[in-house]
Length: 387
Ligand code: NDP
Ligand code: MG
Image 1 (cartoon, rainbow, N blue to C red):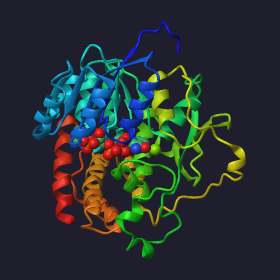
Image 2: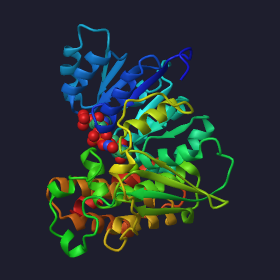
Image 3: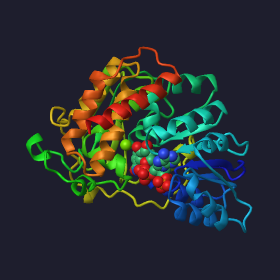
C-alpha cells in the first residue's frame, strides 16, 4: 500500500480470540497503514487490558458487565474509553474514525454488531461466518443498500476472492471449497461414537477457537462455509462443491466458464487472509513462513464422507430449503457444540440435535430480522431440551 494513503481505522470485535489476536499482529506490523480504533472481548478481561495497554486503541468493550470495573480501573491512567454490555458493541462500531470492522466474535453474537456496522456504512472484514449463515439474505441486502463491501477472512473464501480479483465480471461455473477433513477423517460412525472432546479439539493443520475446531471435526464448519460462500459470491447451490484436501495448502478453487481453474495456495496461516481482507486490493509485505514444494511432494484430494459426517449434508439441505432453516441449523449447532464441550453429549449427538431441530422448528420463508431473532431463541431452547 502506498505510504501516502491515510491510515485505515480498524475495529476488531473479538480481539482476544484466535482470529482477533492474529489480527492485532497484522495491524501492529503495518502501523503505517492501520490505526487500531476499537478492540472488544466477552470475558477475557486480562488479555483485553494487556492488548489495550500494548496497542493503545481509542475504545475497548468488555461485553460481560461484571468485568467492567476491572477493565475500567486497569485503564484509568490512560485516555482509552471503556464500555460494557452487548449494545455497546453496536454503538462503538459506528464511530466516525472506523473504516473497517473485523468481525471475529464467535457464533450468533456477531449478528447485531455486524448489522450496526453495515448500517453505519463501515466495510466488513468478515471472519464471523455464522452471521452470513444465519441471515445471509438480510446481510447481503443491507450491504448493497449501504454500499458496504464484505471482505472474506475465512481462508477458503479469501482464496476464492483472491482468485476472482481482476475478473469479477467473468462468470463462475463452480467453486471448490477445500476441507482438511479434520482429526476424524476416514473414521466411520461406529468409531465416532466414542471420540473424546480432547481428540476433537486436536485439529491437524489449524489452531483455532474451540467452537470452530469442533465444527471442523464434524464437518459442520465446511457446511457453514458452503452457505457463507453462497452469500458472499452470489452463487447457486449447485455451483458449490467441497473437496477434501488433507494438507490444507490449496485454500480453495474457482472454475470459470471456460473451464479454467484458479487456486490459491500457501501454508495454513490465518494472518494472510486477515491481512488481505484489510488491504484489498493491495498486498502488503509479510514475514509469514513461505511454502516449500519439496516439503509437500504430494497434494491429495478425496471425496467428503457426507454419510458419516452428516452435518455437511444438513448444511446443503438448509441452503436448499432457504428461509430460516440455516438459522435453525446454526442455533442448534451452537447449543450442541457447547454441550459436547461440556461433555454432556457424544460427538454424533451434535448432528442428531441439528437434524431434529431442522425437522421440528417452524419454517419461515422470508424471514425479517425479528424472525431470525425469534428462530434463534426458539431453536436454542429446543436444542437444550434435546441435550
Ligand atoms: P475464539 O473463540 O478464539 O474467539 C472468539 C472471540 O469472540 C473472543 O474475543 C471472545 O471473547 C469473543 N466472544 C465470544 N463470544 C462472545 C459474545 N457472546 N459476545 C461478545 N464477544 C464474544 O474464536 P475464533 O477466533 O476461532 O473464531 C472467531 C470467528 O472467526 C468464528 O466465527 C469462526 O468461525 C471464524 N473463523 C475462525 C478461524 C480461526 O482460524 N480461528 C478461521 C476462519 C473463521 P473472550 O476471549 O472474552 O471469550
Ligand atoms: Mg475456513
